[in-house]
Length: 115
Length: 115
Image (cartoon, rainbow over all chains, first blue to last red; front, side, top):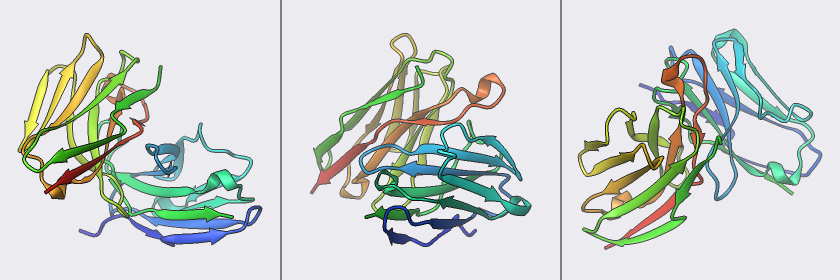
């Protein structure tokens, strides 16, 4: 079974530029998550989708971050404009159910460096 | 009250020794406590999980001990091997109590097992 796919794996941009990350979850998984993992910290949930709908985006900096999940499958996370503090690994995860009590399957992440 | 505090930040253990990582939480509504393992360049992967109706859960060399009254839980890795060298994250949620609740991760423990 194919895992969660993410791209690009690495991205370096200047501050105030924009960047987009793509995620393809495991087939059949209804729930998709975007986490931000800053070096030395645990993953922090940015946004959670249940099929097409947003379940939780309370920690998403909406003035600069946006995310969408079209047709309940792939998702993109966009940052515009980027700040230095956005340097982190952006992890996409998926799960069969709503996920708070089930296994989350993570992708390998997209590492963003903002200069 | 939503935090999960993890210690130590880093741990060095000799091959064959016991690795112990501790976590503490404040929210008594939490009812699901998983541990995730993350290797460099990879996303976290579920290792083992426990609910508060049991005090211990063992899977192979990995054991979770849970102390509900102290609001603490720990991961024990018996006969630690160099292949166990990774970062370990504890997490908590209250997903079983109904409704949505997100998974809160600790800051992580970097384990190095020396041969």
